[in-house]
Amino acid sequence: MILALLLATLAFSQQIDTRPVIGIVSIPSEYDDFPASSWSYSPSSYHKNLESGGAQVIPLQYDMPKDRLKYLLDRLNGVMFHGGDGAFVDKTGHFTPLGETLNYIVQYVIEQNKNGKYYPLWGTCMGFQAIGGLIQGSFSILTGDCVGCSGVNHNNYFDETYESKLYAGLPQDLREAMPTANISVFSHTSNFHWDTFMNAYPLNQTLRAVTYAFDNRGLKYVSSFESPFMPIYGTQYHQEKSTYEWKAPYYINHGSQAVRLQQYLANFFVNETRYNTNTFPDVQSFLIDNYQVRILPYANFSSVYLFPSMKPNITTGSDKKSMLLRHL
Image (cartoon, rainbow, N blue to C red):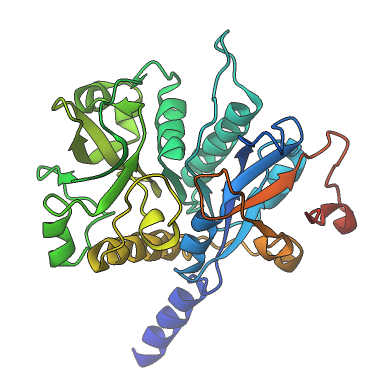
């Protein structure tokens, strides 16, 4: 009996990755000095957020070739889509390069989970909207009518009819603060109306809305979701800002409860990635540490990572030298 218990404990411990590696997808640059045709970026706050939970982080440049992207996805323990301002589809309704990459990753993650590989995905703000629209197969459920939702601290309310995995371990004082103390930073105009989201098929077969917020007119919209049977999560609000952003042109709640909520969510997602058994032996060559943080006077972020565009002729193959990330 004792031997069996020891073997079971050992087997369980081998499934827990104490050094998970998470990829964060960059988006086209919004800055004139670094045109989108040549650059993409990620706010450093998202990388710090995951690192605060104990993860190692690598950038996934949205314009990298698909074979290189798959090489990385096959080795990662999870993926994050961050916030920002990027287009998923063009005027004709076709995917933009960013939308194509995000869709590739969403489909990859779903397929991995269906095949028995525990593969977590997280989306914040724009990333949250991307996951919802891509799973639905249409962005028509995403509306740009949120009034008073840009750069504000709003309350989050729980759907008490559903027991969420995402918030199951939330300390009681934070559970009470989320609907009352304005500890969550929102900065968006587009949103998923609550009823639209809950009734959208096939979206409602994969995702479940778990919290909601109201705009200044009283419009009820989804503020976080999760999949009941896959490790897919998202928040419309910005947990990373409470700890790591000070430069935004609006007030950010840096109070202790807001910071603790950020840390709870970071810990939650990083802990989810620990159950993915992928290994990344050559991760040092890919880490975000290989890049330089830039402070841009005109950016709304405290600091950003800028990435030079990937050329179509860069491939992975088995040549690890070609896999080295280019330094800024």
